[in-house]
Amino acid sequence: MPTKSLRIPTADGVADAFAAFPDGGGRHPGVLLYPDAFGVRPELEDKARELAGHGYYVLVPNLYYRHGPAPVVELPAHIGAEDRPGLFARLMPLVEAHTADRVLSDADAYLGFLTSQPEVGAGPLATVGYCLGAALAMRTAAAHPGRVAAVAGFHPGLLVTDAPDSPHRRLSELTAEVHLGLAEGDLAPEAREELDKAFDAAGVRRTVEVYPGAVHGFTMSDTDAFDPSALRRHWDRLLPLLDRTLTRG
Image 1 (tube, rainbow, N blue to C red):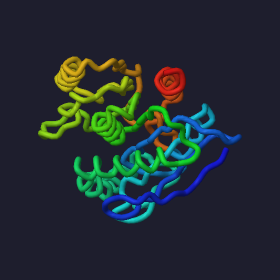
Image 2: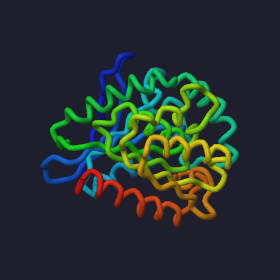
Image 3: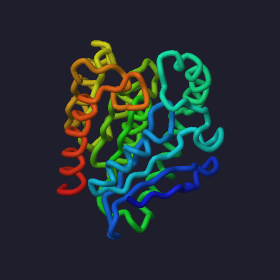
Image 4: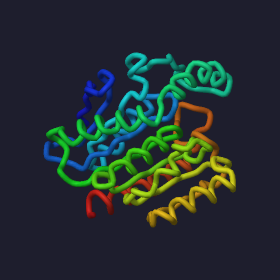
């Protein structure tokens, strides 16, 4: 499985990134994969490799490149409950500094870079995100309706907030098909209602599914939240979505 460490020029500097793509040459549909708040690490690189094995070129950018190369915050090999308070004390300033304007500026750079790679085909792209990354995937797709045909978000965070630029308020231009895989408790009932209203108003084709028994972070095998059955469900939803929108679409 070929992989690359890459440097992506952006309006604010250079973002380091990881890419995985299929063996054997040729050109493949592109997927922009946004990490969770813990950032690029072996867990996310493994997910990129898994997707690449199904025929996709997968780009995983370091969201926090303005603060240094990944890992900006050193992580333990396994993130347990006892590690989270200290990690989030260091991560939250980085998350809060990653404003909507920065997200969209970076998305322009990431998509432009992705489509310029010789291994990436000329067809539509997908954005995939975990936790914080789900909101970034949604923002990116809404800002690039002519390029992004699929969005998938798993155990999403910050999709519905009180902010005037909350992602759910920016869906009017979204044309991509969407799947959201929720842990129990990821969205309060009133937030789910707001999100559904925004999807309906935009005419978005989507599935929003609560994965039974799963807790926030269920896809991440390097955390205590990991749930193998929920991870399998995630692949069972993600792969057909990409197939019908990028491969057969």
